[in-house]
Each structure stands twice: as structure tokens, then as C-alpha cells.
Image 1 (tube, helix red, strand yellow):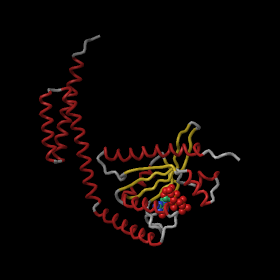
Image 2 (spheres, helix red, strand yellow):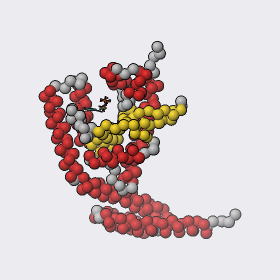
Image 3 (cartoon, protein in one colour):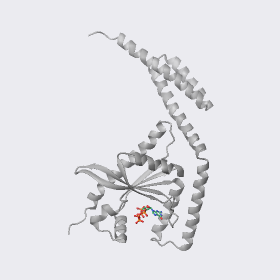
Length: 276
Ligand code: 0O2
């Protein structure tokens, strides 16, 4: 009988988790860069510890040879959303991707667990490229709201503390807390569009300010510096009014100026070039 090489087994899962973290982080950033609301609030991930894998194997009678097939959550990604409605959006973004293939789903939103646990799980196939060639492995993606995550994280610590045998009085408090979390998520959904608009507005302002400052810096390099200082002061005046329409109008004007200035600078560098 050979010894079990845990590091060799788990390395591709580490790679999968770090690649997927980056991909989901980029998906979130891509939304915001396009001034779109992102259904992803945050992402985290982990590879199951050997002791936790061993626990699961022993509890379920899984042999080492069946480990990768039977333990679906060796690699785990957790996507946190602000609102319940976002969970479905994230799930459909995952379904549309070509770099992962959905193997199964577990809907603990419609079918809340007896413990009070709520979350949407997807098991996906994901391929990592290793020095030994491609390796297709399973990843569990848990999608839940911030409120659901708060509940699950605390309950999980208690499960650990009481080794799965939580005292009845704590269990009933957790059930009440789970009910309160459901009410909270419902209440937050009522103000969802209000919050989404506020967040899009704030991100729009951030993106506009970035573009404006970049144009001002470029103009300063190419144009009459005193004029550009005046433009900068005008920007500060408009910014202090916190009027997004005005800021957008100013940004557009500046785009046109910066484009003109760039074209002029290219023209003069061509006409000033010494022929070969
Ligand atoms: P860890 O430490 O997060 O890795 P199954 O045989 O399918 O019923 P399985 O394989 O455990 O059982 O799948 P299930 O029930 O979908 O659970 C997968 C993961 O979901 C768990 O992994 C937890 O992370 C989470 N989860 C499921 N039920 C609960 C719950 O009641 N409370 C909390 N806090 N989390 C839950 P692990 O391996 O249990 O733990």
C-alpha cells in the first residue's frame, strides 16, 4: 500500500481556487468599470484542510481512491451578494461561462436546511493546467447574501465548538436568528433599487473623476499650463456641487479638448520631423 500524497493531491485545487478568485474579482470589477451594478459584493475561497477532508471521508465512509469524486468541496469558492435577487444573477453568470461546467446545484434558499442554513450551491467542473497536463476537478461555489453569510459563519463556529451537537437552547436561538435574517433580506430587497442607484451613482462619479483628472494631466503636459490650471479650478468648483450631470457634461467637454490637443501634438510632431 502506498502512502497518500496530500500535497500533490491538493496543489491543483489550490491553483483552481486562486484562479477562480481572480476571475470572480475581475467579473465584479468589470461591472463597475462599465458603470453597471455588480451582483457580486465580495469573493473568498479556500481549499479544505486535510483534517476536514479526513473527517468527511470517515463520516461518509469514502475511500481515498474515491475522494476526488465523492468530496465535491475540496476547492470552495464563496460569493457574497448584497441582495437575494443577486444570487440568481450570479448563478446565471456562472452558467453562461465557458471555463466552467455546472455539474449540479443545491438550492438551500427554496429548501432551507433544518439548521436554518440558507445558500445556493453549485458544483462546477473546472480545468487547471499543470506540469502534468490539464486536470479537471470539482469546485463548490456557495452563493449567499451578506446576512446569510453572517448567520452561516457564526453557526459554523458553534458547530465546531460543540462538535455538531449544539445544545437545544442555542439551536432554537439560531433558528430564531435564521428567521430574522430572512426578514432582513426581504426588507433589504424592498430598498434594492434605491441602494443600487445610489451605488451606481457613486461609482459613476468615481469613474468620471478618474477620467477628468487623467485628461487634465495629459493637457498639462501638452498645452498652455496656465489655461490648464484654470480648467482644474473649474473642475474643483463643479465637483464641490456634487451634480453628476454637470460633472458628466464637463467631462465630455474635456474629452473633446484632450482629443483636439492630442491630434495637434501628433500633427506638430509629424511636421517638425526631420526627413531621412
Ligand atoms: P466546511 O468547513 O465549510 O468545508 P450532503 O451529503 O450533500 O448532504 P455535504 O457534502 O456536506 O452533505 O453537502 P452540503 O450539505 O451541501 O454542505 C456543503 C457545505 O455547505 C458545508 O461544508 C458547509 O460549508 C455548508 N453548509 C451546509 N450545511 C450547513 C449548515 O447547516 N450550517 C453551516 N454553517 N454551513 C453549512 P462542510 O464540509 O460541512 O464544512
